[in-house]
Length: 454
Image (cartoon, rainbow, N blue to C red; front, side, top):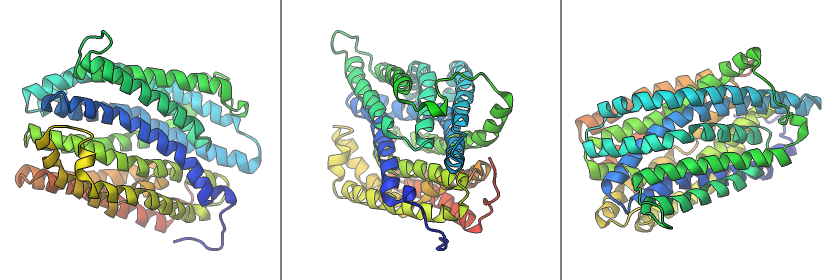
């Protein structure tokens, strides 16, 4: 796979890759604690609240992925410009212009998404949910969570800037602020401590919304005092329609792809919801645990996208396979021990999310299946984001659509028709990842991306 005639420079060494990835990993782990905190607290409130937070949480994440996916497209372009500027020794200011175009687009997208959500969410959730209790609790959660979208979109854009320019240190500090705020506010608002009203699932949503606002404020202050002036972030640039169109032509495909990625989870939970409220609660617990492992994959995938884009911008696309291989090696070294630990200590891990004995026991086999499926399909996300890093984001979307169709057919059979156990149902996750992985490997080996310009 690798071209041995080209030797990667030191800035693409294992040590450097880890230095870039570690802050991203810490940031993603911290941010996953938002959902995990909600699950852990609501798991002590009741099964209805726990199940509803699963459906509503995934529904909100789909809306968030509109902005986050677009920001990943922005990150890829920033990475390419950063590589070009590094090679030429000038031109870093173009990154600031890209950033501000992202501000205008994502700001407008947030307003439109919020308005449509308030109008359409009740009808959409009413049409897909069987349980009246789950529906009512889900609507409460969504309505109090939606105001956090503008903050979340802008935070994603700041992350894109720091990852795209390979300066990821601020991500760790921001995430610590985000998670600390969310945990404290969850404790206060869900259970009614410190004189606050006891808000239950409404409090979980409000806590996350306020925490997102605090996170955005942190990034603004951090950028004002620490961002390198050469990038031009401090110079406000109005909408530039030519650059916006170019940005949209790359980032829009990533946006749709990320929405489809999370739609997989919503589809899965909708299938499970029809099996029963306990099964839905089990699925939410295992999903929360699986996201701990997923953030490792996502962190290395984000690094892969940036480094692939950077090295192509430097004029050395022949180094792409070597970059991917090095990222995969580090990803495997960090993820596999964690999966083994989860598989060996299921009661300890599940107990962090609920103290209901029946839910703990019902979740064990599903956790084992999740660990096995994740281990077998470990490289899929790194490969997918590496394809995105080449600039061919439309191809990533095609791969996702193919995998989603196969996934939907598989879920229809094993859940809708066979009514299989929740543990067997979880094998669908592995099927989806495997489909993505196979397509990406064929594409990277085929080298059709060499002439892709962004």
